[in-house]
Amino acid sequence: MKTIEFDIPEKIKASVVKSLPLVNEIKDQDLREKVIEGWALSLNLNDFSCMEEIPGSGVPGGPEIGNQVHHIMGVARLAIAMVDILEDTLQSPLGIDRDLLIACALCHDLGKPYEYNPKKRAEWEADPREKGLPCLRHTMYGVYIAMTVGLPEVVAHTCGCHSPEGRFVRRSLPTTVVHFADETFWQVLESAHNWTLPKM
Image (cartoon, rainbow, N blue to C red; front, top):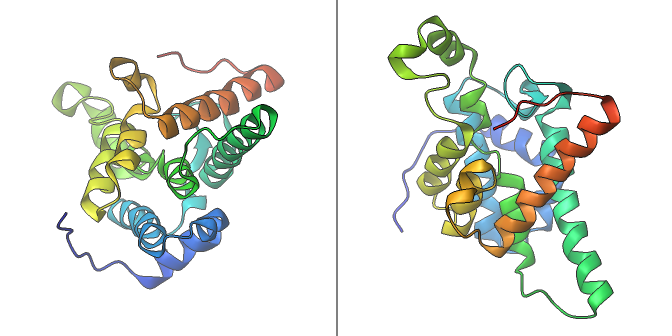
């Protein structure tokens, strides 16, 4: 697959590695670098210098806890733990590639910088009739970023199908794990903090 070269500041790439230490557990160097590049591109195109600048909510205006790093790392750790516990309990492998699972989990919200872009949100909120509100959800934008930097199709699939959009397809195994890790993250916090999360 051909990829497009982008001039992404090295400090943004470095910030991704610092924000997502689990990326270093991806043994495949090419995959690891593309995860970093995907996040760096998404941040750079939407005027963020690091992931910590993005609020820790599921959707703009929703209940917040921490920042997006807390969410991404939380979901990734839950996804890995689910697979490890199931495999240990059943004493049988699930047949999931660990590198791809980590990449899918770390990239599931790759489109969030776009959905949280302050300039874009101001445009969309000014007149939703013109472009919609939001114009694209983070799921669709995440697919765009993943495909642009040459991430594997399964990572793009996770970006696009971990959320309610995934009801219309059969989710891959890594995407299924990430979907339930993501749902667990938000639903447990909703109960613990007595939140009312937006329903889709």
